[in-house]
Each structure stands twice: as C-alpha cells, then as structure tokens.
Image 1: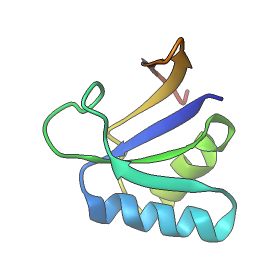
Image 2: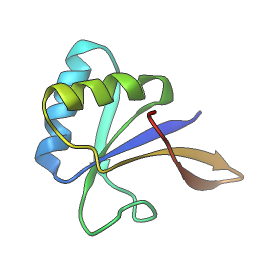
Image 3: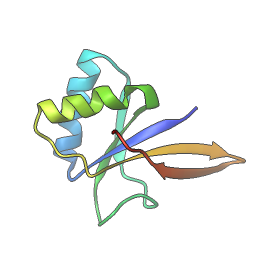
Image 4: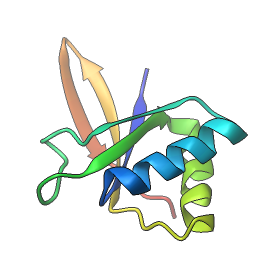
Length: 88
C-alpha cells in the first residue's frame, strides 16, 4: 500500500493537523520525517493514505499551517522509496 508523508516544520504543527484530521475523517499517524526526505534537520510528518492527502492539506490550510513538502512512499522488495507528490 502507498502512503503519503506530509511534512511540517514542527511537532506542534504536525500534532495539530493530526488531531483535527483524526477527528474529522481519516486515520493518520505522526512521526519524525524519514531522513531520505527531510529537507533541513528535524521535521515531523503526518503519514496517511494517498487518497486522504487533499483532505489533510485542506485541514492544514484551514489551520493556517504551512506544508513543507509531500512525498509518496512505496515499498518494493523490502526497500522503501519516496517520490514527490504535487497537489495541483
């Protein structure tokens, strides 16, 4: 299954979005951003199903919390790869 990682600047921002998204519509988890996609230092991500990305992005926008990046993960032969995801 493919998952999306939506990256935020801080654990506080990620936590706010996760809490609101979980209340409203979807399963998601919060974790430290994997090193392969972390742009500069410590950041936190919300991991959700790919089909929930637009909903999580809408929650972020409503809370006025900026998204640093969005990546899709795929596991093939035991190795996880990431590819950028474009909301537009």
